[in-house]
Amino acid sequence: MGKPPEKAKSTTLQLENVNLTPALTEEVERQIGPLVSQQAKGQVVSRVVAMMLSEKFSGPIAHPRHLREYEEILSGSAERIVTMAENEQNHNIDMESRIVQAEIDDRKRGMNYGLVAICLLIVLGFVSGFWGNNTLAGMLLFGGFAGVAGIFINGRLNKSDKEE
Image 1 (cartoon, rainbow, N blue to C red):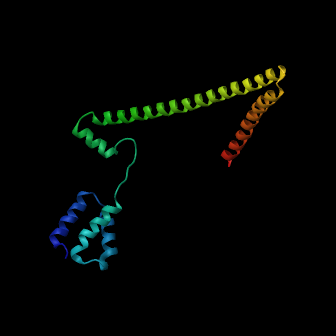
Image 2 (image 1 turned 60 degrees about the vertical axis):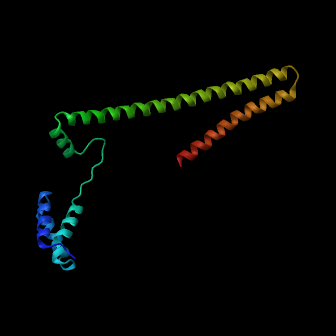
Image 3 (image 1 turned 45 degrees about the vertical axis):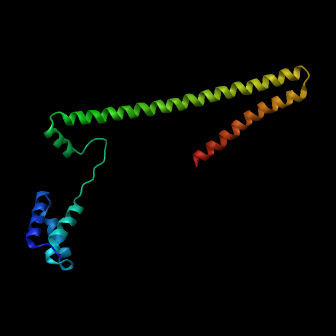
């Protein structure tokens, strides 16, 4: 059912190897004392304390302790890992800048093409009206002005949506 007392002693030795604080271990033992059998107490205490002292690390480079261990295994490896992380970060920044600039250029190009198209419609409307084709002139001018009005209305609606 439970571990023999010798196994519990080895678990306690594992706790000492992980540099767990004795005060924390004693407090966990005191709190779970009546709830757990003596045979399983050492293993339960070690698992609870290990879980409480677990360390999480997130970042672009390895944990400092791991970097130190890499350096011990292979001299200069910590510097290489940090340099690799810096290069990766610089690459990401460069790519984001390129993406943003490409989106800006695309929008500017679209606005320029739209301006040319609307101006062309208006000019063709005036030319066809000058030549006497009032129906075509009205359609072209209405299309040009409706396009401009649509852009302004759509721009206002999108701006108010972003502000909310």
